[in-house]
Amino acid sequence: MSAHKFSSDAEIITFVLEHTQLQGDPNSFVVSEIGDGNINFVYRVSAADGKSMIVKQALPYVRIIGEGWPLSLDRIRIEAEALSLEGQYAPDYVPELYHFDSARAALVMQDIGDHENLRHALIARKPLPELGRHLGLFLANTLFYTSDLALDAHARKAMLGRFINPDLCKITEDLFFLDPYCDHERNNYNPLLADDVQALWQDEPLKAEVAELKYRFLNHAEALVHGDLHAGSVFVRSDSTQIIDPEFAYFGPIGFDVGSIIGNLLLNHCAQNGLTSDSTIRNEYQMALRTNLTELWQTFAETFSALMAEKTVDQTLQSSLWQQQRLAQILSDSLGYAGTELIRRTIGLAGVADLNEIADENVRAASERQALKLGVELIKSREQLRSFDDVLTLLTTV
Ligand code: SR1
Ligand code: MG
Image 1 (spheres, rainbow, N blue to C red):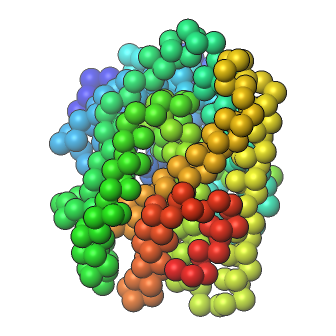
Image 2 (cartoon, rainbow, N blue to C red):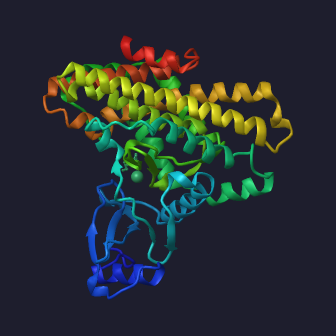
């Protein structure tokens, strides 16, 4: 057990009372552990009057694996700094950070408990009319304002230095780009997919494309990316979207964030085939998902293009022809990374409830197969898919 870990509820309450405006008799507060993520410990501290805060603490290992998978505590500093920058550039879409304490490897932030985890909302087919637009705005603003387009050359390099995040990047390097493409012990897939998985491992053209995507992940330091923008990192109400957990943040390809969340919405689209047998309900929700996807990309593309045209500080990068090429490259990168997210969530270590909650393994296998095929197609065809409509057409052909 780690020395800095909170050893009692009383310590967590004291931490919150010392570092926030929450006040009162410590005995009147209640602490509940609410984290169901893979890596950290998360607590809600509630006062008798209903006010509450969230405390997140990092330990020097992966929570779901234990001390056998060590992990740098610096990730919580990175999370706090990323949250604070995202709050500067997209204040409507991130919870407020109240305090970060490096000795405790812990932070305190706004409780967004009136929101629901996006993955659960998608599985329950909740209407989310603003989701695509909100995600597009979050992505365009955080990614533009932390890029060379917006920042002074020195300030930007100094910022990049604060987000060297080797341990968390290594998780992504392995789980996205290595494990699913070989017979790795960390993989975890439905035995009914054995033939499909074998075919994937032998698909050399696919593996060359995945190598290119990994190379870009390693070398294309375009902007401060969230780095883990899956449905579990997003909380929603019908009128609000909040993005949390940027502990994987680093300077990487813009398309990695855009593609990760697109991949999660596509994954849910595949899963809906198995989550309900009522075709009317299913078709209606899948149509809403496609609208969300279209709005996400359109909002991102329009906002990012407008920011490039109006706010680019670097004179060389003001070329409008180059800016159009940049957007086209972001689209193809995004589709490639969406493909890797679909594949790794289907057969890799970190599976998702969208698929895992399909009880019948044959029905589940059909959704999983579609996710795999869609992932492969997105990776291989990403340069040819010139519009988002082309992408949605794929959903009817794979
Ligand atoms: C061992 S960590 C597994 C996954 O959980 C995180 O949220 C990331 O998505 C990571 O790939
Ligand atoms: Mg996370």
